[in-house]
Image (cartoon, rainbow, N blue to C red; front, side):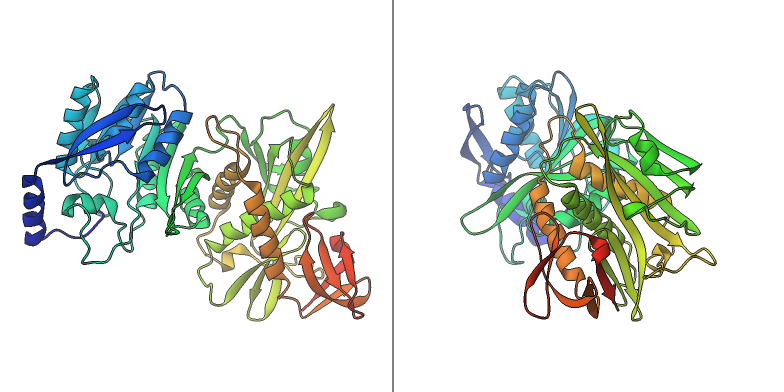
Length: 488
């Protein structure tokens, strides 16, 4: 169950509602077909959220006999829609009345081959997972997740259906179901999960949750109602399934060697030690005791500049590190323009990460890679530059290269993976997020020096360059990170 706990009053109310008989609901599918549904009072009828999910399911096209699982089927109308789209459908619901009602509706619509089971994922285990998911490697799994926040005294349908409708306080059902899908291999390597969620979960929270279970995540649909309530559909999938993911003990430079390869988009190359690792303008990257040094091939056609891509990738890495910050009250993670991530702890500043975009032309095509270097642990006698090194182990003692690399892989796939039937990411939204992160970072230095003169930060422009204000109140465009010095 996800909603309110059952007691004797809940059972009595459920029986009263069942005794009331059925209600007739009419629903029009995205293709224009009209269905008349004869539903018990305790079964959730199709509504606006059903419509949004139905439109996305239709856009997936023909199922061609592939396997589909609907969690929380309710009336069963979306499972029927998938069946008519050519999917081999199974469904489940925690409400036994919904299960019985859906089975009857399937029979009436010549779709009795849709198998429906009682059960489903929830905050508490209720039998083995095979009670509600009979197979592995489904090609599609979808769930209209409970998302309503309702006063304790409110009654919507009935105790059983409320449990599938009202968001459980303190329980992350999205994370719970992804964990079960991952652990039990419920989704095929090329499969898609679609989850309709409410506004209580931010996009950043959803991306973080998906990455922890090894999934890429992207918002692909949203709708805002007249009362301001917002719902959205999240797609999850295995990141860069056609890509190569190679780790070598030692090599020259992950970015240089990846750029010279013909590997597919999403391919990554990592190393424990780089003999010629570098940052902006060829600056040497010094190896820490333990390091994540990895480059990803992220594509060849973008509508935004390399500067913006670098900022977007930077804020993505920053968010990943924030999820591992076990001391958020004492350690601050700062995105420093144009391509560094800093840690501020006990008044001291150190560089924990560098992010660098590099491209190469191959005929009429530009191959682009993003190189990410993160210091995990300290190496004795490391060189000290303008900003000393910081280490991710200060955020979380359990942090490792494998964990960070997997989570960043998922996050980058959410931005750049071109998975079938999944719309491209809205990089404009990430551009705004990156610009805000850069702006927030400028509170860290006590003094900014631009070409030997003290200046103050003004803004980040649309091209990802910084605008500063000199002591005469004149605005100056700063398009090179090397010309702007931070003092702490």
